[in-house]
Image (cartoon, rainbow, N blue to C red; front, side, top):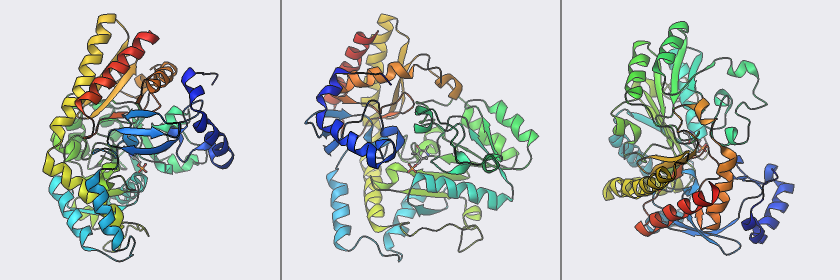
Length: 431
Ligand SMILES: *Cc1c(COP(=O)(O)O)cnc(C)c1O
C-alpha cells in the first residue's frame, strides 16, 4: 500500500482499465498474482521475448506467463499448428489420434510415466493425482512441502506458495479444517523431517513436491535431497509425486527426473505441456494409472480434457524442444544474467543475489533461502520497489519476490545484456 512509482503515472490507459476492472472482477484480476500494487499494466500484444502494453511501452518479458512460454510469445510454429487444427474444428468430445501420439511422446521423455491422462490445468492434474494416490493405497493422509504450490484446490491450500503467499493468505478461508486434517507438511530440503513424519504416520498415501521449488521464489534442492526422499518414500511404501508443472520440459525434455536422475511414481505436468493453451497432465506407473476410471475405480473426467487445440499446441511445442535441443542455449542466456548480476552485487557488498537452474532464475532481496520459512524472511517490499524500477527500464519480472523468472528460446543475447544492465542499474538506485 502507500507505494508510489513515478512510472505508474505514465500508465494512464492501464490505470483506467484497472479502475473499471475493480468493479467487475475481485481484486481487478482473473488470478491473484497479477494484481501488483498499485495496479497492473494491461497487455496489447506480444511477440518473441517482447510484450507491449496499452500505453505503448515495450518490455522484455522474464515472466513468460509464469512458465508456459518456453519458446517465447506467438511462436510461428505453434501458431501454425493451432491454425491447422482450427480448420478441422476445436472441440469434439470424441477421441483423436493426436492424444495417442502426444501421450507416446511424453512416455518416451518420462520413462516413469507409463500411462497418463490429459486434463485442463495444473490444479486439476495435482487434484487427480492426489485422489489417485489415496485410491490406490487406500490411505488418507498426504504430505506436502511448506510453501509449495500445487494449484488452488482444498487439499493443498495450506502454507501454499505463489499468489497465496504474495497476498498473505497461504491458508485459504473456505477450506474446512477437516478437509486439510489429512494434509501434513514438511520443510523442503529436510529428508530427516520426512523420515520422522512417515515413521509417526503409517497411513500416508503420497508425498507431493515440486522437485525444484518455483513458487516461493526459486529454491534449489540440496545435493542429495531428491535421491534421499525417493529412498525414504520407497522404504515406507508411500507414493512419490513430482509436481513437474514448472520443471517439466523446462529443466530438460524429461524434466527434473531426467535432470537429477530420480524417478517418481506419479508425475504432474502442465504449463509448457500445452504450448501456451490451458493444459494439465498426470501420469505414472501403469498399475497405479489403471485405477483411473473407466479402467479403475478412481473417478476423474473433463469436458475439455485432451481438447484438440491444446494437444496441437502442446505437441508442436514439445516436439520442437526435443528436436532443436534448446536447453543449452537457454542455460547459457540465463547464466549470463546470473553471473553478471552476482559479480556486480559482490563488488558492492549488497545482500542481494541471483540463483538459477536451467532457464529458471530468481533475484533474492536477502539471504538465498533453502526452504519456505527462510524465503519468508526476504524483503518482498523492496522487491516491489525494484519491480517498478525495472519495468520503467523496459524489463518485466513476475511481480512478486515469491515467483520465478523464466528465459525463453526467443530471448536473444542482446536481451540478456539488457536484462542484466537494467537489473544492475536498478540495484544501484535502490541500495
Ligand atoms: C502453476 C502451477 C500449478 C497450477 O497449475 P494451473 O494450470 O495454474 O492450475 C501447480 N503446480 C505447480 C508447481 C505450478 O507451478
